[in-house]
Length: 196
Image (tube, rainbow, N blue to C red; front, side):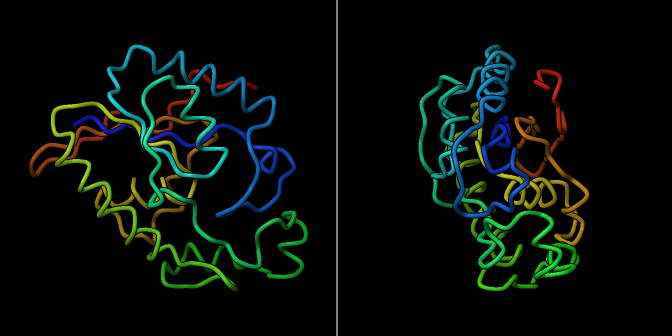
């Protein structure tokens, strides 16, 4: 199976530099342009289905790709609890260092939210199920920053404590070939189609 991981295009919240987790807005104008360019970039891929997070920004990105979509609750972004909706400035005033703690310790729970380990534990069984279901196909996942980091780190055999080191920009593409007993990274954070 060829697995293409896509981070959603820029959302209105991303544009405002707000902390976004399991809620949030749809795409910004820039994000809509990014999604169109992403669709052009993926047009040559023989994608049979796009599995999308139920959140609006991911669904809009998935729709732009122009392939059949299945909504997957497992791909919802990490719940950041009381951090959600804060500006980056307010986040540091009210909860100093909390994001660093979250990434340094995958079991650390942000106030009122989830842990990265919990994100991993709901996404990786889903990815393994897809590997069996689509063994000879190309599929795409339209998901989010933390979700994709957890998946990429796991597929690369890295501990979750290293997932901060595999950041994806908005509308980035990361692809793997997954075969029995073998995982091959094909491309990482490809933003050649990126819109400024």
